[in-house]
Image 1 (cartoon, helix red, strand yellow):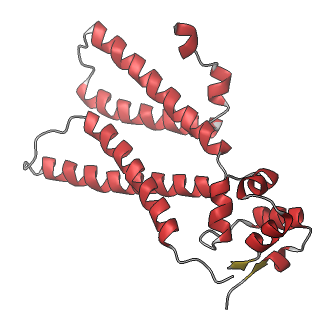
Image 2 (image 1 turned 90 degrees about the vertical axis):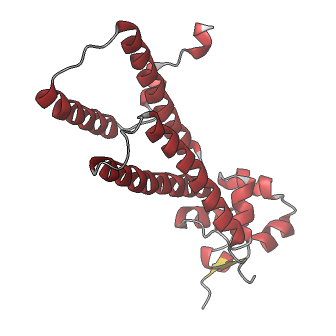
Image 3 (image 1 turned 90 degrees about the horizontal axis):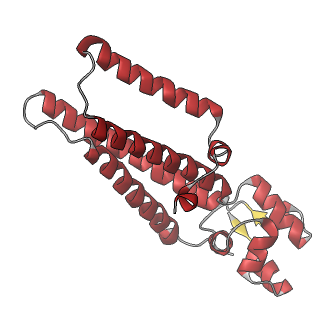
Length: 143
Length: 64
């Protein structure tokens, strides 16, 4: 069973550029340090911490595999994928920034982090469907 | 952008999938190019022109 799930690390790494991995790690460290330095570390339960670490590893593998898949797509599929990611990025930025501002204003309760993930995944799907729909609706050129 | 991709493909008796394989794209992409709903990049337009044995400007034409 485990052998089915095993993915060669070098196969994963070839999907993403070294620069994007370093940049993502640096931003992650900045976010973590920016919150840990003024507030200190919490007191996690080891079981939950292990589960979180496993989920982070699984998500990282998923993102890298998706980047690898992107390179194998042809140019139309890549364009649709990019439009979907742009829609997800812009949409989730607006949604969660708005939510955070309304939360800071005291109107909304703190947001469960899982909604960030669900929101982004849903918006990628919507963006992809919308891009394909726009292509299909575009009037054909006169031959 | 107007193009002659469908006419040239049909003249050779190729399916959309077959043409796609020759230029390295999917059947779906060939369909969207043929109907003018998707304008290919310059390298893909040149690959298409090459498999038909034409110049790129003979296959693709900018609409006024």
